[in-house]
Amino acid sequence: MTCGLAFPVLAQDEAATADTVVATVNGTEITLGELIILREKLPAQYQALPDDMLFNGLIDQAIQQTALEQSVAETTTKRDELWMRTDRRSYLAGKALQSVVQGAVTDAALQAAYDEKFANAPAAKEYSAQHILVESEEKANELKAQIDGGADFGEVAKANSTDTGSAINGGDLGWFGLGMMVAPFEEAVVAATPGTVTAPVQTDFGWHLIKVNEVRDALKPTIDEVRDELAAEIEQKAVEAKLAELTGAAEIARPGEGLDPALIRDATLLDK
Image (tube, rainbow, N blue to C red):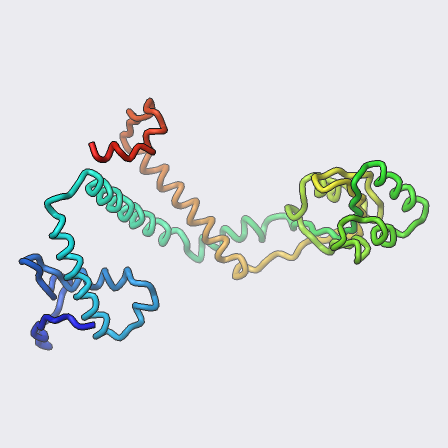
């Protein structure tokens, strides 16, 4: 990409600033600072281009955009003004939240969040269980009677369970934690005595017989393993606190609450 305009190279002792003019279009100045912002907005793969290519290409882009801007400057509409106003509001809101987030996620805050959520919390439980899934309560009771009479749970599962994925392994579900199974199934697992078979349990999938084989404490993750998760939670709390602080201190009125909510879809209002 070439610019087509020539500018004298600044002398070594002449320090460039963000206000250094790099081009003009009909008297409108384009500055080095604007080029820096344009570069920051580029996708990462373009930012890796050689500096001379980026510099000239961004000058071209800024010149073209300025010429296009000038061509419609006299025809700015209400829609245009509202787009620019909301873009400005969004940018400045993002800037405000960025400083809140950066100040919130510290090593001390991460450690405190880890201690509260993991280190000082009771160990979560993990369960090793088998199940048999059938279509009716009657069938489940029939199979339970067989197991109570001495039939092997795994063999009954292989022969009868409609959950073919686990049936091939005797109904074995492996180890799982809370939140991984649907609520009625999980509640039955938590209440079960290891080594016994539950009464039939109904879920949206059908009727289950469940045998909990073992219960153990789950290993607690290290702080490095949950760092991103904790950082996200800290950021969210910091943002919520800042928003509550600012909106709580602001004088806020809502005269639009009585309007028809469907009005937000009426784009013709922007042309009036």
